[in-house]
Image 1 (cartoon, helix red, strand yellow):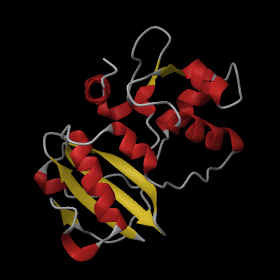
Image 2 (cartoon, rainbow, N blue to C red; image 1 turned 60 degrees about the vertical axis):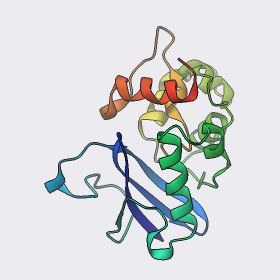
Image 3 (cartoon, one colour; image 1 turned 135 degrees about the vertical axis):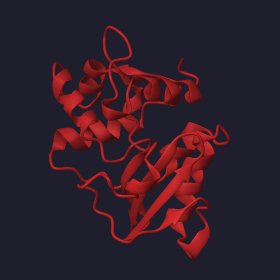
Length: 176
């Protein structure tokens, strides 16, 4: 298992965990106080303490390449579609959550779906609230792009990162 803590200029510090050529966990970059250090999310599965501005440091192979892609995307230098090509761990605790993840990865960059539409795409029409719960617990930010899920009446929310962060991601993709 490889754990990389990285910085994305203008976004903050993010974390990525990879194993066997797949991303198994990703925390989107967010501003942190310098004294607080990495791993503020207690539920992450990572090990190690690698902080990197340059993804290629340390010869981390797959994880380094993915981090560089994320950094390039957030800088506006790589298309969002490239993130959909990154292998990720889609093994979830239920068939519904696995279906939500697969359906959401199929939503093209620059497009959005409502929570109700995501539920329908996942095979459970009427389960909009459950689709929202899935998005709130998403462990693969950007790779399972919950920022592309909006409420029926507007953009909706984006957890602790906030609506401005969601808007910024959607603007990067040309959805707004």
